[in-house]
Image (cartoon, rainbow, N blue to C red; front, side, top):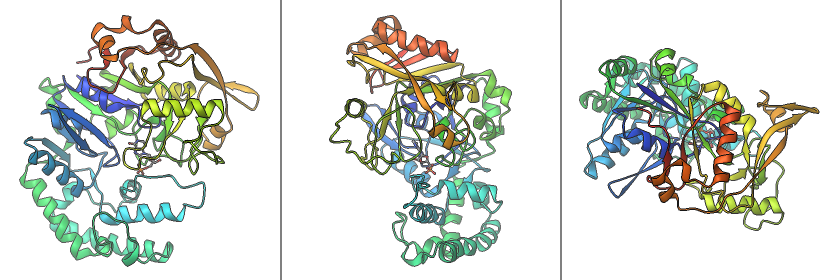
Length: 467
Ligand code: IMP
């Protein structure tokens, strides 16, 4: 039996909490895309663990798998594993031989390209982890796969071909001397383009991966576990609207967070994923990091919201004040940078698009507590584009930017005790909150399986147990 967890919006939907709740009954938790661009915090046994690559289930004694659709920075992987071991845990993490390797030059190039775009509207606001450049090399057939690290001859040959290309890209195309590109947390930038240094460091990672028995053919490994009767969870990172195919290109990450990615990114057939549950994780409002359109935006963030020069700390209009209130209550600030996130009403056309792309069998709606206490709660029910009503997102991002939301308003609900409601069950949610959730169920033709009513693990109303 499988459960796939997919972000329905722009990332930051609170997937970690739902993975945590449903992951309890999983034996294996597998990631199928992305890399160390996905920060999550796991609280276990009173201890807090911050992870960006290792699947969160590994903290709870599950087998963690990084599927072939992932891009893996071995330095981050071993840092996270060593840190968990130092704290007394014994994580069991397997890595697909077919997953691609993030090298230091990918991170440097990620930074160089973002810097080159920084004066334009094209800056994506990447996490700087080298995700895009690594997937570029994968598609360009010049990448290195995790399994290649264990074969010194292949590793050296491939580096000797690729590294001079990357150095030339940095120096001759972007005009940046790699000796003073600066800013790479992994040390000397010059070394990021030094074949000998890379060969030594990455051969050692290959040795560790092999000796610690971490290398697997992900599809075979997972199919065997499923045949044995194991419960397998596929943990999507990021979200549908930053999916490289289904998102608002070019403001996207370079992988497929949508459910199809769980097949191509693990080596299992669509029927395996499709036979299981596919849970869309929805935040009860919307937040966005970085630039790009956001038709239901309430209050902007300068530098991110196109054309906005207000101050999120000094809200003036009614909608800016609402945005500030939701941002504060929902903790909508970047975990690393502390920068305020853009905030808006729930965008229902976006959710219809996400539900179709992934075939959600159920929804988990988070942050219902964050909206408590508002007199009215609004959603963008549809858009008007060229005088016509449209119910889903148009494909060209510029057309999406031209959409005007048609708003629908619901009576608000009072503040409530999240832990008590979670303990008592769905029926004890305020009636107006249930009306809001039932509207979503109707519009997406999908039942709500779980409701997040607070940040704690015990503050989730579970209506459906999945495994
Ligand atoms: P990248 O994944 O670092 O290449 O970043 C590409 C885009 O995806 C940027 O707009 C990032 O802000 C966004 N992004 C990547 N990971 C996350 C995430 O975990 N949550 C929200 N946005 C993300």
